[in-house]
Amino acid sequence: MISIRSMRSYLDANGLYLMSYHSLQVAWSRLNSVLLARAFSVRKLTVVPPFHLKGRRFVRMGENFAAGPGLWLEAVYRYNQQLFEPQIILGDNVSLSHGVHIAATTFVQIGSDVLVGSGVLITDHNHGSYSGESPSSPDEPPARRLLEAGRRTVIGDRVWIGDGVVVTAGSCIGDGAIVGANSVVVGTVEAGAIVAGAPARVIKVFDPVSGQWKREES
Image (cartoon, rainbow, N blue to C red; front, side):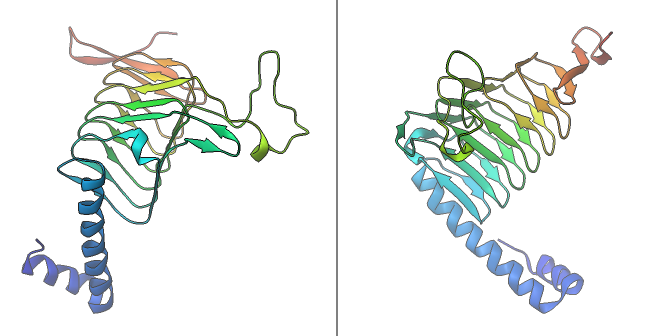
């Protein structure tokens, strides 16, 4: 419930029009969240409109999930003539900022107590295949290339992912790791590491003995 003091403060700072618009947004967001919580069989979640959610049957949602505007959460069960059996598993207390895109044709898992910044992509597939015996051809339009399947992307507990990060197909991020803004995660990030860059490289690792984040020696 919004307090009278909070409403007066918002009115003084923003004026009547913005306060009215904000109040309608809050009411609409709360109604959506209640309906979504029932759809995903959880007690509480918060998803701020607008959002794109697809493949609910293939998504297992934890408690206290929260997402800002622009969430794109899609379990891809069909693409053109391809059929998939995807899994998206979200732990408890997952918090996503604005414009986060999570998509799976096979398996994406995000652990509990994970914080994700704005404009992040987490996926387990690509449009087309670019290695092996039958790679995709550059003569074929990207939108018509077959989606990949079979990879697993896993993010552990207590991970912090900064703004603009891309977590590529098949990556694994260990518990307690931190991924710097605008990084591209390819492969494995060890638990308790700070990584940054494209591709992301280890900068520091947490030392449980000293309780300090120590710079990685090159």
